[in-house]
Length: 112
Image 1 (tube, rainbow, N blue to C red):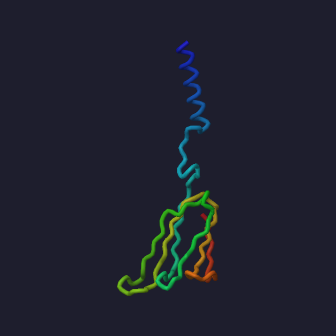
Image 2: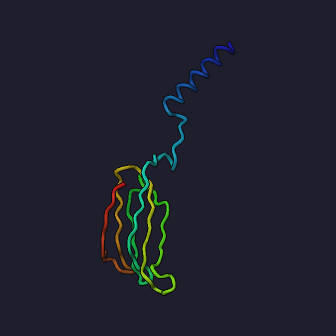
Image 3: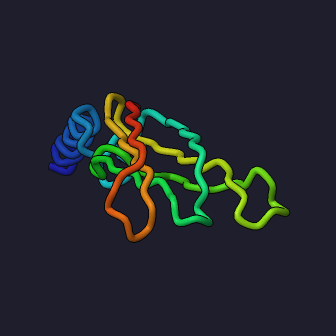
């Protein structure tokens, strides 16, 4: 009897592994397969900044940073860097806006 149960248990485990029932997927089941780095000029000291719009079930913002062209000059413009990971073919829309103003100055669209 123990041998039969061990055989059934082993068969169940093998079947589960083949069907992927125990396969681990990162980020709550979202398969991450593509990384995209986007660099855009901005000047956040004047209130202008980039706002990213994307499907959060398909894309994840991994990192966002700003590096001024001249770190010794207060208010210097520079480069915003965004790093996204997500499903290939997903769209990312970045809008350049000013804090407190609903008007979009620039819009750029990227595809992973």
